[in-house]
Image (cartoon, rainbow, N blue to C red):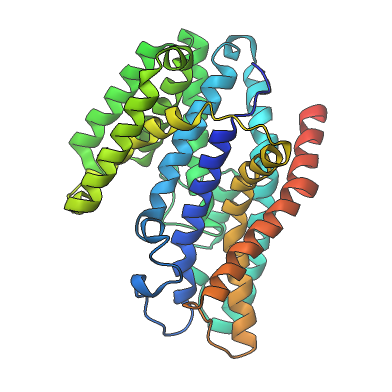
Length: 352
């Protein structure tokens, strides 16, 4: 790989993106029982308002961060890396936890169906969709909706972008101009097709936007006023959004992300910390993103099953329950990464 530098600012952004998804999916608890979802009544609403309303947009930020990391790691190396080596690395990182959580969700959904005579979140949990899940193709366009551990859908799309990324750089090499070209094509398709555009173009757009930052890091770091301009832009845009409720305008959230996410990368990419414990903590939090992303749905089903069996209503609007849920997800994610994902990743990379 290019180097082993850790971008601690990017680790912060990764964790915030994962937290946004966890909070957005907190509403899943309302699917059990007859409680009506009132967004404003969810715990710590004033603090996490943006996450409760727009947390699903954290997926686009994940893609943007992935693009940055991939171009930073592989831009100068892809031509010397075989397709087998490249995808072996990705397989070893992504597949073990995907497979484990898929099987766990199959089992948990079975018990949930026995109790409730329905599938949690009404997913398409049949043999056909299980087959798509096995090959991480659950959102390639062959599906009839979300299935099993549905969070994997965004990783499923990202795999297609990995293939596109590898082929593109293998043929042409890394280029700012090519990134601009891909970004332009995606924007045109989104403008023409809007919601009919396949999500592949969303992922490609944000992925190559993130890559654009990685390809131009030296220029960004040399031009000192870029940081100041970035801060002023983020502040002014945020003020406009809050004051004039611009997020209510059709498609504005998408445009807002397209400008804000790369600016946040620029702002955070060279953050440095001297405290070793803080740096270790930030690295740990960054490593929990994939774990928490795939583990939180199984945990939600388990919590629902517990409350079903004790015949109690989930105290979904209690702050204590919210904190318990988030803490439990992060706690289990930590041990999953340390004792399952990391060891099996290293083993597969050495022995495949």
